[in-house]
Image (cartoon, rainbow, N blue to C red; front, top):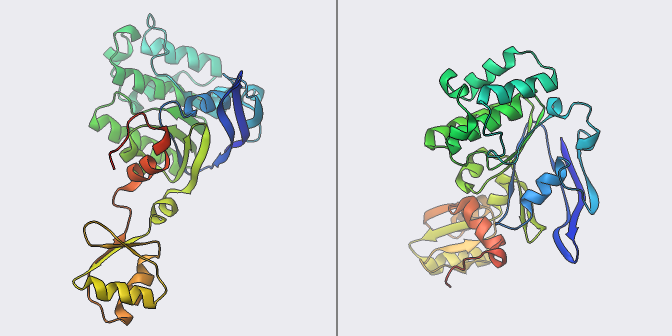
Length: 299
């Protein structure tokens, strides 16, 4: 389990991470999201002891990363897949990690198979690897110690669609077997598929957090009927505030079951009734971090 408590990082007068608190729990995948410059990478570096917090704490199973006796056996970390010795082979990099952590030598071949690096690829120097191959090697290195926690920054970067599906299945299986996964990614559609919980930050502050299903459901309900005016009256009679969208549908924060009951009681035939999460995680992300985006969506 990863526990972040009032974590803050200042560089002079500039605060890049401001008093963030959350937990990534065992058996769940937590998506750590935010625009570029939001403070994600700095936060993750503080979690693994590469950056010292100005205030607050980041602990793994109740201890700071620096206090873990053999960190790689408890926490698998990949913050930059390109930060690997270009002159060594993939097999050598995994072998060094295996020897440092004191795990069986057979773990190297096992991991090469898990991440689908062929023997020929494993014996090539990393300087000749594609970005996707570096990602696979980075994930393998994070898994060497068979840790209970994974902290991954952009693990799908550079992977093709089949590789992204493989990575998703790997992390889902890891969490389903009790592991804790914290991942940062700009591939919001992938995070939406795999994540159980979401922590979103903008300008160094948490803008929302919670179970993915609850956050998306909080978007409300979209409802439509052939007689829009009658539908509005039925919702009003049930005490349900609603607004009219440009396409003529109604949007309300009430859940679909309550909206459907109100329409039924008012004798209104519905042509559409659904949760208003069709835009999913991407829509929520853009809305909650709008003031931190470099690009602006035209009104």
